[in-house]
Length: 292
Image (cartoon, rainbow, N blue to C red; front, side, top):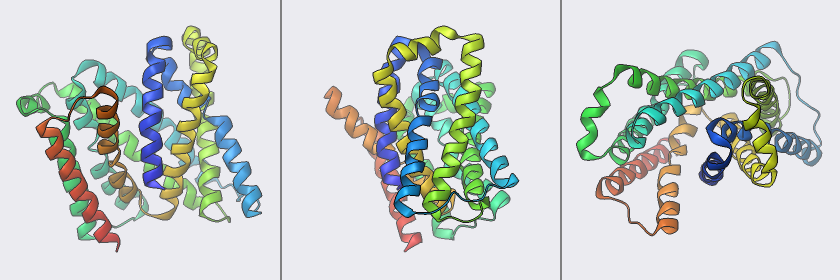
């Protein structure tokens, strides 16, 4: 599930990047939620039909966790865009991808999702690999500059981490249903909240971005489908194992994205990127060993 989610996310990011050029950053961001919602509802309907199960019982904790995850994901995206606008991409990415460490800590505190020592080592190794791959050798000093950007970047990673924990909490708080139906139910709830909040914001503050996404509806639908599919796979993985395992393994999207970028641009990866991605894969190997 995580490998499928990471792969779909790479292509979704590419689709959103293309939309940014035509409808702006905010317009491209809301496509993930507004155009993803119909597909999430279709996935849930299909899951119910295939498994012949009723909808799980909604509970107040489940709705609360889903709402928390939805809002944290929106705020995390806003902070991420701010950091990437202000700083070089590699440095910004290094800030934000402290997420697996934060997810592991928050998982223990909020859900009691304890990891084995080997899994903790995997989280640390993967995060170190992200730093090496993302930051050029001469830019490490920049990691310690501009406290506001550091706070915003780590804050974005923390919000994404908290959203992962919240979604896992919401899945576990539903009554009845197997892991797939509970995951798809929380996905539908969270995307409904996100589409509603962002739709209202855009209609009130930036109608051009909203109407622009409607004009390029074919591309928007493609990005929405990829986003919903990736999220469905992430949520299903959250239903099966602690979120820290999922988000750590999810960083395999880095070598996937590098491979795709290399094939599209014809440019070879730099030395520090190759070393960093190798470290990431070593961390993924540790994670698999911890789960064996």
